[in-house]
Length: 364
Image (cartoon, rainbow, N blue to C red; front, top):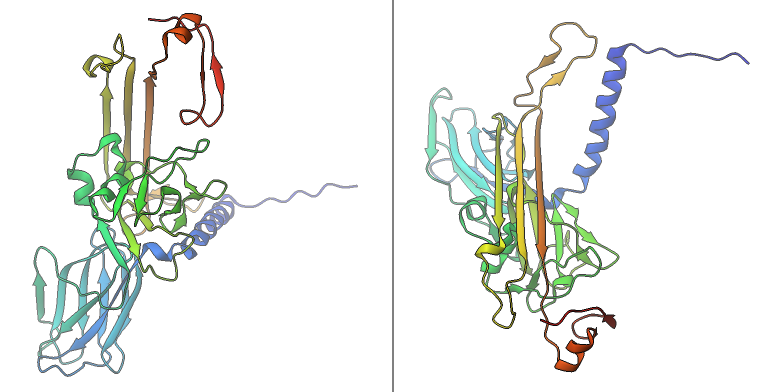
């Protein structure tokens, strides 16, 4: 039998790998619609008459991402599935001045309405509407929800640096003290009186729940969270599988500017208070450190001539986050004198879900 050897140019191999990776990532985008935002509205003139066929463009200045639609005969436009961020909205039509509105901030899960009014005049004249933030009206959704914005995550103090802990600022959300099952923790949130395992957690549109125990998987680093929405009642059909509430997390994305940070925190035994019932101060040390980095990702050219790498601004981005947490602590319990002198103790419910005897204990 004669072996057959196939040879492919390096450029072909590079293009094939790039296509395969993009196809793989596109599969995730199909399931990630619930973490987007929608913007709809009407385009009218100064007298309130609709402007049919107007061109409306939403552009993200940070990434260069843009999407353009044409208004219907009733002057209605729809921009569906926009990544949550700040946008510049531009409206153009024949015999009307060009209108630019910014910044228009869209949050995760939002379905907002924006009314655009055009002035009669030459198209080369630009009318700019700007401010700290353009107010949007949301009239199409009946769900009860709150959005935890990036400003709140970055500026408010939080224990253990868990971004979802900010949901406790919502009146219908409480802290869940349920025990973890195996390595999977609960969501940590009681929403509407339901236990923590009744809460659905989604990250970038993907289900973040461990189906074996119906609990949240490992949490996302606080430094990597852009914002999230907590829906407590009457959530939309795209959600489900939860009797408590929905926590819909959106992570940060790379932009045209390289950004990043490095952080570290430590709590040592020396600054901890002694348990009033303990004869000595128990060991307790917790360290938490990590970092983030994001920005434009260059395009690599494989055997095509010219520069090896070209700029990825306005087209290709990356964002990476790393965090590590270490804990060293001891538990404390009391026992009667007889058990203490024998050097053994048996623990069961409600301290442990099973019965176990500890021997060779030295009484203090």
